[in-house]
Length: 432
Image (tube, rainbow, N blue to C red; front, side, top):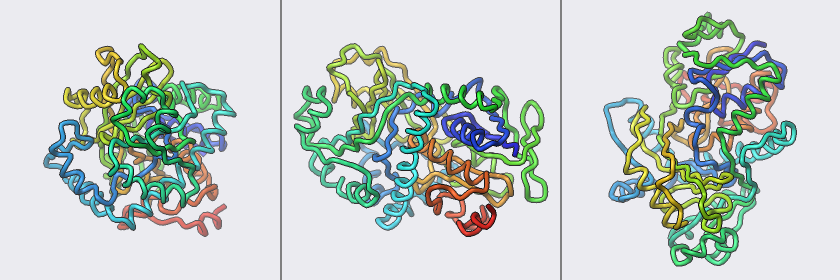
């Protein structure tokens, strides 16, 4: 089957690789001149299978009100007259209940744990390198209230069989020795030891070459105008360079996916939430993290990538823009220098990207009401983490196979309405 993957970020490249492995004739279309040049370019570098939670959580509305008055707030709202923004925010608030949080976190952990195994297999079969480290993520708590609040995450991790360790101050320092310089600023942490780190941009570029070896064609510098649909079925993709006839289309355009789908009556609740990062050369390894430290106070990840430190975080709801705001840079600099003093942040490169967020935190993977039109998008801050597992689930669905994990709750059908049709496991089994 001829399949077009729209988007060459980490989700698009991993999808193309898995589809090619399944025997499909694959073409990837992207407006950029190469892979992973937008949201996947300079993300936080976390591959956080354990640190995997919906942003929509109990207590978030109250916290959001407090964050408004913080100098270094993890959430920044720049309201504008935008019906999509308002609708997304209301849906997100409706997910801030204990029941929905537990359901959404369970779905995310199921997919992320599958991605952990899928990434291990992919690394073994391809041998690609991307400044990877397998030393876990340390969620760092600066006060006892944060440590106590982690109990709900521990419960969810235990329920899904995800390894974890609750650490006191000294144990945090044994795990991350550079924290000895600031021991008075921390009270403890939550370690998820199976988490990894790596350069998402390097990974995507290395995997693109492996996909090309399998016959995948990459059409770069090619604007996507729309999907050609006739009688309820995909017939092709309309691009700035002409029309491409295909049997199936996978939409993996991140935050821009809803704009492509709206003309076809598919209302995908994905909205851009901007994140920022700094990339800092390491001057003194003894004052640098060994893996990833997640600063719980500011929701900022500080990650070791080879001879660099990547500092990434914040959530700015401001629509489709990549403006680099000086105040956001100050927040990143504050977090990293407060925990790892001594680095020269003046040498850092500053970047922003638009994370494609769903209101419930779970990505959208699977079919739509249009035959041959599939989605693999909405991964938010966890695209790098969930990419390999998402690609395998997507490839199975396109190929008419039952996925290796329970895919219930991943498709757009979970939002109800006329946006999609529900394909049950029984129906999938009947088709295969």
